[in-house]
Image 1 (cartoon, rainbow over the protein chains, first blue to last red):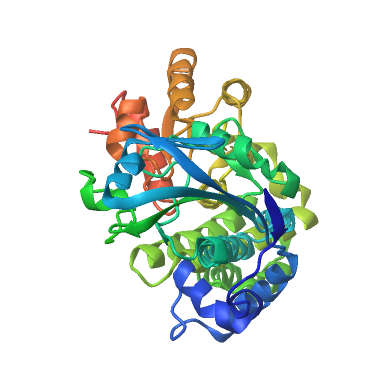
Image 2: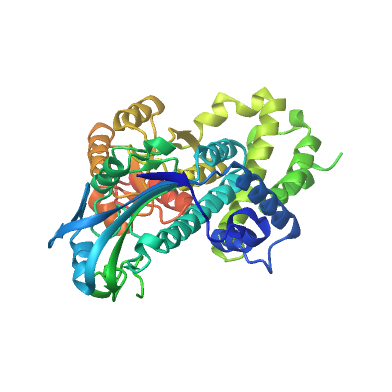
Length: 232
Length: 225
């Protein structure tokens, strides 16, 4: 198991309020063209403050797929119980690897947000959006970083997916990842419901194969109204 | 001294235009002894109503409404500091009572917090139990507050089975308490299948739905068709 500080591919994305500002504005429903100067400056200050509280950390482990069937994918130490993600392997040439990770922004941002909720819902809302944005970007960056690692660079990868996605049940899926990775070592816990604490944390899996023709089950999934449906 | 109507108007407009600084200025100009608490509260609440209308009209986004709520809370907070009569029991007893919380197993409470703030600003007495709230705590709160409405929030599907049990128990034990649900897993159809009486599509429309519930419960009709 590897436990190290994230080597971020584009550190600028996580340290520059100016870079993050338009992304946060978009996320919370503001347009840079119509927002008032005072609100703009306040959001910029909140981003600057929020960034100081974030410490990105993660645990990651890549393991061999030992078997898969209609309803699950089994690796050394972990099993993914999902019909849809299992079906994805039939669209891959030589699926070989499961990469699992848990990433967190740490508990300080959670604490600040909780404090802000008492005095200013606006501040809490902005910081919450910032945290979600950075967590997702960091998880994307981590996925890229892992896939470009020398030992696996000849593999192609699925999209990352998490417990609760598609038909992978949240609570049992989180349990599987936590038993495999022990992310308590970086201060991340799972509630019995599958919610992970600190809130700005992400647990995820990626499937590696020699050739990946489609990166998620969406292409062959019958749920046309799924709000998470992806094009590829 | 600014005239009575002008100061209340200024208070109302400061809230609706999200001007926290002007709300602070306005409340400091009010002669507390000259005003009934309800008049001041109503001015602040009218400001929130205008902000809600601005949101429904597409002129405000969610964060705009949150700034208006922060302005409202600023006004309330200052008034409570300077005037004991502002929080008189009589005033509180006249308001419909809502018990609100995030159900057990879930900790995502931003939406719930916004709903609670909007309901309070719209004239409800809100008892916010927080997040990851056990069923027994909800039931006890309904009992002790004699709640008119139980508002349940969940952002995940995992707690829904437990939530259904809570709704069944609440309906059995407190049939005069209306139940409204909201959160990411819900739509009107799921809310009905869960046994709820109402569904809040978002924080902004929540007061409209709770107002309908208060009316429909007095005539024993279900809100969700």
